[in-house]
Image 1 (cartoon, rainbow, N blue to C red):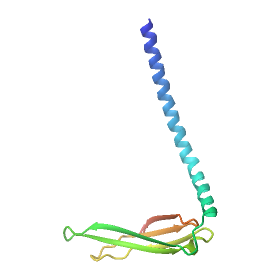
Image 2 (spheres, rainbow, N blue to C red):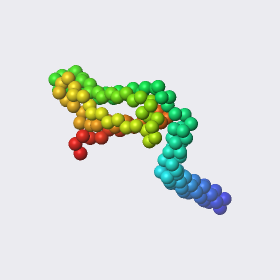
Image 3 (cartoon, rainbow, N blue to C red):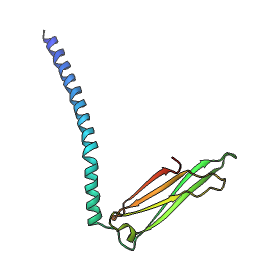
Image 4 (tube, helix red, strand yellow):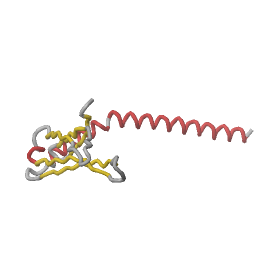
Length: 133
């Protein structure tokens, strides 16, 4: 009988631990999906107001893609670059720049548009969007 009680208590502890772990995981997901974006937004707003980018700052950005060539083992690069003055970033709502990729030496071209957003604190976000659908 004592062995049965011991096995039942171990089983009960295992079930409680697994259910507790599943509930903790679900709670963590809910917090991450609902509260994390709001907290990041608040942090970014405080950063924009309390620590703005100096007006004489210059942000330079370059994005390169390296692709294998159909001619052999050579690789070719396609790139796009942009520079943003701090004065533009400090405007209310930040500043957006849109750039397309240059054609590479072998005639290929990345069919994408680079969208850069600069916030008053100097935080950059870069996204790529397709040119055709």
